[in-house]
Amino acid sequence: MSPTETLKHEHQIVMLIVNSAEGEVRHITETGAIRLERVEKMVDFSKNFTDRCHHAKEEKYLFPKLQQRGMPSSSGPVAVMLAEHEMGRKLIRAIADLLPGAKRGDPDSVTAVRDNLKAYGELLRGHIHKENNVLFPMADRILSEEDQKELAAGFEKVEAEEMGEGTHEKFHQMAHDLGRE
Image (tube, rainbow, N blue to C red; front, side, top):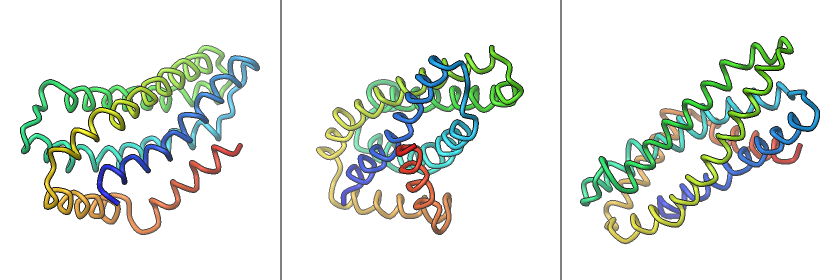
């Protein structure tokens, strides 16, 4: 599996969380109630799998390699992806910060969690589409076979050192479980 195929596969897992977030938005809108444990798991997944694993692979390895091959980081696709990663982090931090109020039953906190979940889902849906259909095809065209091997090794390093043994699989299972609920 090429590095971009690995990232696309991870996108499929992330989309299970996006779908769950969108389901939670509907639930909150219809009932006014939040399923706190589900949202806590979404936040955990987003902080740890999406950011610490998936985005780390892109930011530590893929994007710098693309820059080495002439793709600028201050404009164009890489700049957009980096800005969107930061927007996603801000939305997840906001949701995490709002959860104690939502747990106490504060309706403004519940509404704000809903709105941030909605924004996060919309952001990631568009972000993943751009990466899969614009950035990754560009990367596949400009990266050499040696570049691909270096990226694959870097991705394995992220999984081993950043995530730890079995953690990647744990988050895959969490995403599938949330996708079924």
